[in-house]
Length: 190
Image (cartoon, rainbow, N blue to C red):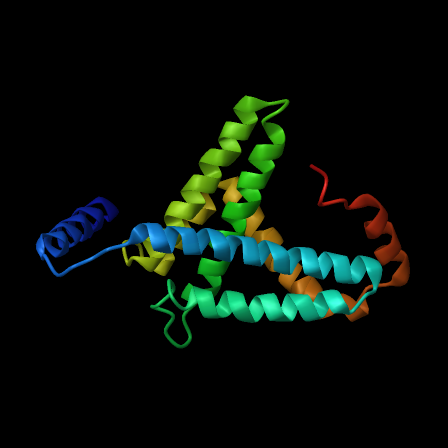
């Protein structure tokens, strides 16, 4: 079955549900929740960077607390996370990439509106892929195929995965490299 056929079938299923007077769909609540989750993921990333830059372990405690909250909130949207599937992780990375792409676009708005709009387009595409996966419109393989087609999305998801790996291997990083990165990486520049 082609993607367009699947979309049409899913669309018709949703229309049928909407005809049922007992059916209530509050996508605005889930949309707000997904943006809250994006911000929590961003707080996790900033807590990690603050912890490694300053050496202050309190940031890792904040990271852990925020991570636990984010996991609980994600359960309200990501329901099809079966054992052994990557739906949970890919959902998290899609939201993280959406947030980062939109932030890059926002920073570019002042000097390069055209490039900013490209990033906003990729952010929106990433966000729609998140919903397509979690509403069952696309399979995990179809989502991965769509990600492979867009370099900006692929790049942001890879960055998100790299941050996770950096957290795991933080102790192995040399002090010289840490010092260098601390000087050149300024993620909070507005």
